[in-house]
Amino acid sequence: MTLASITKRALVVLTAAGVLSSLTACGLNGDNAGNSSAAQQSGTVNIGVIYPKTGQYAEYGKLFKQGFDLAVAQVNKDGGVQGKKLGLKYYDTQSDAKQDAAVAPKIASDQSIIAVVGDYASPASSAASPTFQQAGLVHYGFNNSASTFTDTGDHVWTPQIGQDVYQKANADIVAKHAKKISVVYLENDWGKQAYQYFKEEAEKQGVDIVYESSYLADSTDLSPILIPARDAKPEAIVDIGYGPDGALVLNTLRDKLGYTGEFFGGQETEEFLSLAGKNAEGTIITGSFSAEGTKDKKAQQFVKAFKAKYGTTPGNFEVTAYQAIIDLAYAANKEGATREGIQKGLQTITDFPLYQGDGGTFKFDQKTRRADNIKPILLIVKNGKFVQYNGD
Picture 1 (cartoon, rainbow, N blue to C red):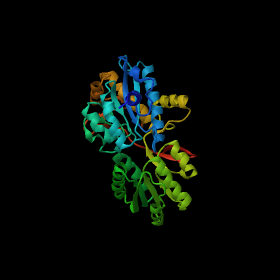
Picture 2: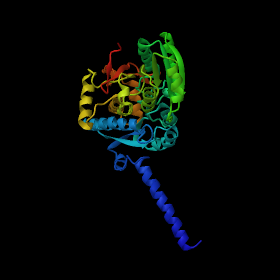
Picture 3: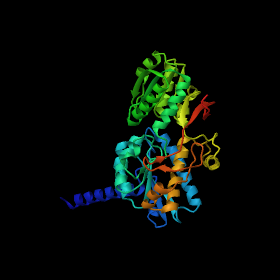
Picture 4: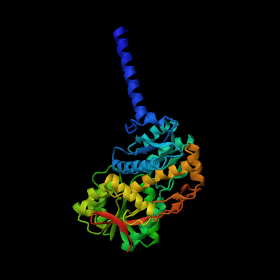
């Protein structure tokens, strides 16, 4: 081998090492640029964030980040956590299970990280949980409603309402409007589990499900399953899925198939409202927060601060992200700004500040590691916006 070729190979290796070092410092998406060095200082502790900055669920990632950043600013304005500054380390996983599993060891080995929040989808989050459990690092799945999410171990927690509770409320409101329905649902573990909860409650309420079908998250044409859903002549059609696919279901029914009956589905995001447009009017969903309807003073203050910073009204996804950081900071201030302190706080604190539902405070059921008293509310689209619905 010539000296020139040896030199060339050395430069390639050094360049690759430099790129790897840069990625390690900045996280998968570069969001951590500028704060990673500060995070190593003794005056800063971090919360790791696994979330979809890019990909098909990027809309949720944007909403989450707004809530996270606002919460951290508030915590630090109030003095941080036990005298230390609180920071965030973001990792873009696209809410994909393979990416969550791949990045989890890196997060677990970073001793500046005292807890982890995320991801958007329960299947993706669950792929990372075993690594965090083994590392003694709290995994706070603030958006993970799958009833099996916390099964991994005692360091896996969520304040999110479970799908068993959500789908009971969903089936109950559907039963008030229709006794003969068609249902389509997302073909993943979350969707199948959610549909089973819905189906059980709907049958108890005397609802006849005349047609059912699942669909894939990346589907672009749902006509093959929606034509028979329409032709079954239901009084209502129910979609159990996420926001983008909910809009696809709704637009296909209204614009292509001429369905004019009631629709239950979608999610409370600007993306859903934008994609569905006028078709969204009258759509009913279950949620956990109403910016216009909340009577809780601290929740009202959150809404005011959010509008001042971002110029928009926060919804379910923004408030749950905000509350996740507030919860963990509250635990850190009570029991220690360490991994052990966060875990102890979740095990012992009985007055976490609650922004969702009727507000007040909440504590965790130590057996399920879920919040014990957060109840869903109903939301309806009126004049292009989601507002609280009284269920009539």
